[in-house]
Image 1 (cartoon, helix red, strand yellow):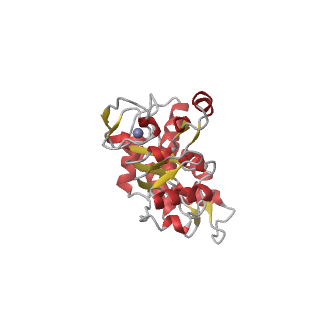
Image 2 (cartoon, helix red, strand yellow):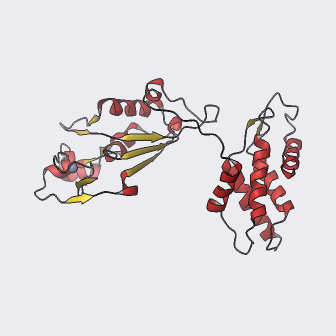
Image 3 (spheres, helix red, strand yellow):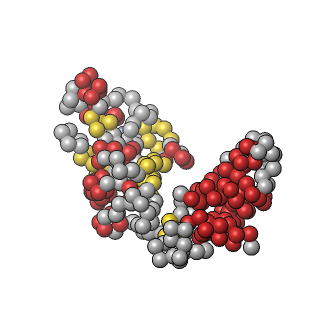
Length: 269
Ligand SMILES: [Zn+2]
């Protein structure tokens, strides 16, 4: 896209209207491409409406005067004008901030209190949401969900997860990389996922990554350069311990250790 250099609101070159562009005599056109058209927000319970909508910068306000709109620091939403706004974990964002987002998406403009200026916001929002049963998850309000198309994403297939580990797993120096190690790590997570009746919370891809990485560390601690099957199993015992939640109806309730052994055993088959 084309915009103006040093404009924080991504004005259209044909109608520069923001406080950054307004007072300036010379406006230089620039091109914004690829990754730079992507604005990312990490959803968290601490996320306030000001993070989206911007706020007055006290230092600039002192210098330029409190009424000067140039003293206003735009938030992520203004910066996302003509871009893609990615909100990770939308359902960790407090309701109040969610409502602000609804308002902006609805009206397509942000009006900044105290200034007689509003900025246009034309953006595409892509967001992720944890499953509702996930601890710490808030609800995404109906008014907000109504503005999204939803796609449910499950666990990756076996071969896809193998590729994720190969690409993103940390390799520990001095330990030989092996296909078996990757496949065993994924097999253990998959084994647990095949027991949804026993488990309320199943291991994520991050659990597989941890098994993979910790197995290498265990080999390293033995001063070995090759990971043994027992390293993977010991890593899995540790990793699964804190990541599973045994269902209250399961006969393994309060016997998680036994269930973990069963999971590891089943992964060998
Ligand atoms: Zn501008």
